[in-house]
Image 1 (cartoon, rainbow, N blue to C red):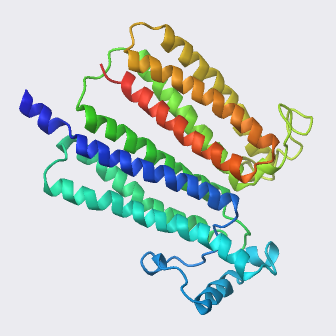
Image 2: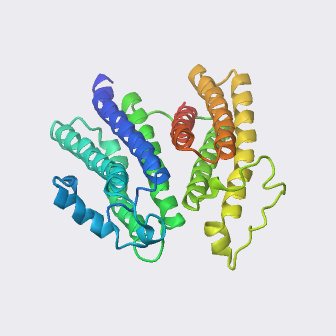
Image 3: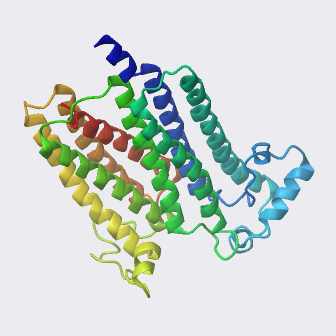
Length: 343
């Protein structure tokens, strides 16, 4: 029995994955700041290796600035900006990309060391492979997103931003789940399928709300319809419909904000019900009951923060706080779902 426990779980692996999750959280926060400062298109080339070195001389800066001047965002939004203003947005984007490179090292170097030492339980290799693949894909998706704003647009395509942010949150959730598994070892599936289903629904609603929030961000929809609960005094915004269904779902400021609000109401109500039900269910482990209540409270607070951010027209500090809080809410929800999935 002792031998089984020693090979079935690895707390060094769990700690390593939690550290990687913290780096992913930092990437989400810095990425949000990069978007809110309109910095994402300041670096117009993808150089995975040499791009780690920023401009080191005035000539280097002028060369980067010249490349930026060739894209529509400069001509239509930032024409005449100073070199100092360009450097401000450049450093945000460079910092986001550099942090991504550091994140890759934080994942792969310990992975090799732990693998050589045979410290990784066999059952964890499948989720670790998925995590590694998602991480590698995220870099390519990031450039795919940036490329959408370099020729015909002045910002990145909202659906590509949604894909990029959605992958980051999926990676965060999978890292946490795998870390919990590594720390505790394999457990028997819970007998109460109703609670397992409720946890899955809660994660699904939180994740859907995050994706809809990304579409709001990609369309700058937080800068319009800044009253609540109505939208410029109406239940449905005037510009809800576009020429096609896809344009309405992905490119309408009114539609994306309304959808984000509506799913938010559903999530708010369901989370409060889960919190109430878990607090009352004495059959649940105490940790699961506490996490259920924490998830409900966290989602309620996030809803309030979302309304405040909207009515303030999405200032930088509130926008970053709202995205950070979304990551914390997802983390609590994943922890709750993981705990109730085990006997």
